[in-house]
Length: 301
Image 1 (cartoon, helix red, strand yellow):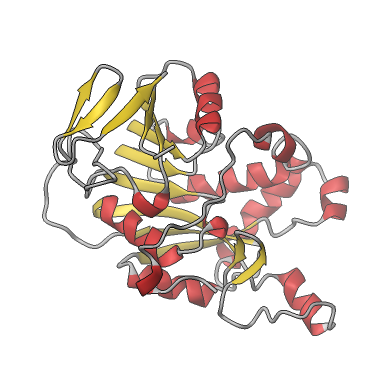
Image 2 (tube, rainbow, N blue to C red; image 1 turned 90 degrees about the horizontal axis):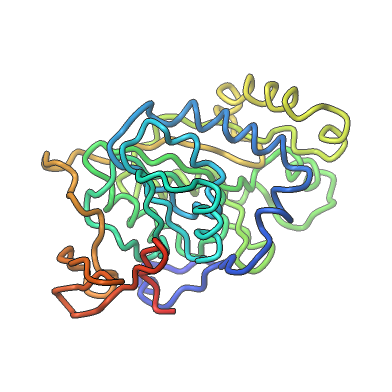
């Protein structure tokens, strides 16, 4: 059961990839098709250019090459080891900022970004509504959220349920926690959470429709991804794929330029942070947030 509004202030568990071999163990074997299909979807949904983009749960920077049209890119992740890998991959490009933090309490100022991207993160979240509220907060007026979620109502689940080979109901709208901190979501449930956050969904795409072992073994990944891309738009009407990508727009806000500094203190929420030797110092609560090896650390660890 996901937490309700009254429970969001409690500490939430996170699925932390600190020290994991996620880059090689997960993406290094047999997932070329999924990577290519997701890139096709993101190219359809991302704006061509922008001022400041944050990717939440950026990990080792797998998708960072898609953000070449943005003046500044914040790669945010709770795992320091993932951010170090991202630095190794991307080099010294001054457009990138590496930030350690979580979506539940983003260390970003109100209206700091014109685009937010979150891929392969939603399925780890206990409090989706709270996370979407934070995303809406850091978006500028009419800013774009490009996100992804694991779909509960996909074709394989429907077939297994109708053949009585699984107990859980893919038509039921409540989220399914099939493993600790691993959730699948019904499209209608997700649509309601987006609406609650004030995010207006503009487009949805069905992605990874051909995520079947037999097909992935016999069809070359580029061919399978091209077929996936050809069906993403029409498939987005029914949303029967394992993964759904979407683009949603933030509401209008009073017009003003993006803040020069994107950060705010996650402890007291003051935007008054000063860069000192090896840290950002908060004038509001006197906390010091480390800046170590190019990584801004806004965690308590």
